[in-house]
Image (tube, rainbow, N blue to C red; front, top):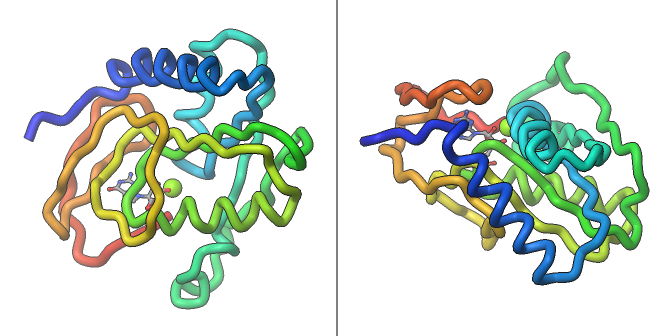
Length: 170
Ligand code: 5GP
Ligand code: MG
């Protein structure tokens, strides 16, 4: 399998997102990255837009449906949302979309802060393994992996495949 390089995916994502916002006449999008992998993707998108827009950070650990199975996470940090959610057009960003459970959790958390006017979903990679009816509006690339395979992705470096014994999801 030929793995894409995030650096090469980002420019097209920026262009697609820009057109998506124009089509919907969204003037003041509010960007939110999901900790941890969504934060660098969000920062890269914002840097490319060069409009000095603030970035919100969401930590959905407490909202995961498997939170109790996973035990306590000492690394859970509070979400940081430096703007209102109520009535705003949000752009929610994550690195990898797999089952859709992280996005479900993110939406639940966001709605605890207020009722957004819209939420646009941006993901660098779609692993094509959805368990919930969630689809990205903007996606860098779609990959189909074997069940035990995961993508190693810690920043804009080129991707690598890794084998894993049990499924992870954070
Ligand atoms: P989901 O909740 O959609 O099953 O999984 C998405 C979340 O799990 C994302 O926040 C992502 O960071 C993480 N994730 C799932 N699969 C992978 C993978 O193969 N590689 C990496 N780096 N993260 C993954
Ligand atoms: Mg994650």
